[in-house]
Image (tube, rainbow, N blue to C red):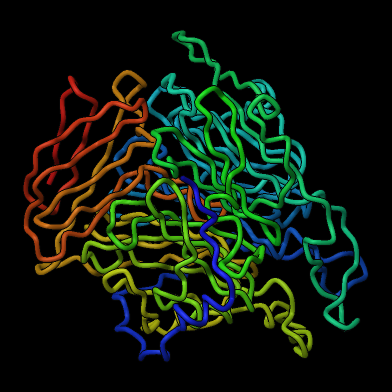
Length: 566
């Protein structure tokens, strides 16, 4: 029996009044590198004759990614620029290849031009040849780059049948029909036409609010590539057949996962200033929006929020996935706790997150175990979209000053969250942060962060949590019959003593970004794990034996060989 999962304001104050703010938790051991991608700066376009332009795509910012693009076992970085310095209407991708020493050098870069203003990046193997493709969403037309090997790419969107004009934002790759090929789901923002806007009360020029523009539809492209040696990519737009054309929104965040417990991949869309959508998979290629019915369409006071980024995690270790969404300043970021029978409740107050997030405008977000204690912490990349009331324009040398905010880090303490001290000074400084990608960039056993910023160069944040007293496990799932590609959509549960750690292989989470597709979990002081339970994308199940911690385990479906590396 489904329930709406919403509470009245009276229930909110009576049952979940937020506790007084606690002292900040100890800082995570993070170190900032400021020179990564130093020549890629997301500059805001300046119209002729104007000191500063307020173009809406500029304030939404762009994403970033981390993935092994050349098959050498090391994560490379992908940075999305809004527009190139020599052509304000076109963006680019900048790929930083990692060397054997774990460093990224601008001399070893690949630059790929985009047909429009750059927004998001999605990384995954669409051709089942073992090398991931790059899907870049844009304002204008998207770009789809086939990985040719030898660190080269070829754009083939039109050739493959991928046509998606407009303003695309988040995208996910997932095998919706269980045919062994990854399909594409892509969200769209608003039907945008540049226009002048002003701050509240007719003040100085400012960025426009998205509610001034009509929403658009999200799209789904099924992979119909034939089984052939050349593996020529073919995609088919089935948006109308899937039912997604029945509703318009302003999508910025996307989750492709089984959220209802029936074994089928559902689609959750975080909409900006509109009700969020939960497209429930009907099993026949069709989807029906049940977000309001299942309690995750709006907050517990019945309000549609300005949703931007979205993370997926089992934050309270109850075996069910939870959703964490970032929002506009004045709204708190929301934790939708997963309940039995595929419904959700707004549990933000109960886990002590409302007061700490209400003053921030969040975009990039990641649920990841920064301290390796076995539960996911939260990282939020912040930055205003409109000038706070009464705030004058920034100084002439920094017109973005009123929009900058510091990152926020939240430590998970048995399902409740405490904001951690920022620690290093560079983390405390206000910035206009947008895209956020996560992965073990230096292969030392802990998770590092990549932040794409507007008006500044990207930020690489190295984590130093791994050590003698902390242990970890990294799991790579691969499909030998699909070129050895990552088994995106695999549901993993790691058993270690009394602890059960559930994670999903889905790199396309957060805000316009793509993270390491390998599952990385902390084991705390446990020097071994007992077993790994796996639900594969085709619905089959397998259980794999335990072993020592501090290694990467490669899992394959039943009948295939497995590997483990220290």
